[in-house]
Image (cartoon, rainbow, N blue to C red; front, side, top):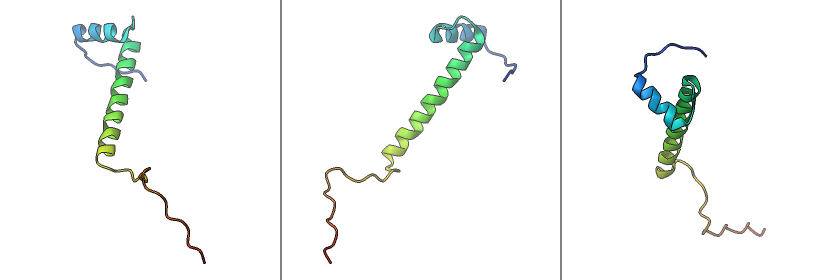
Length: 68
């Protein structure tokens, strides 16, 4: 997708250095991709800390099935 945005030239140069890209578009694409990845990881970490996932405790022994 092609868009037009105003970005501070010094900041854009820093993004290019940090991403290792020589061109503006790939540098921005890489920076945005990394930002999204980190936000998703942060959200996942928060969900884990909040115990949003209900995994069985590996220390617990499962109950044997009833013998009828």
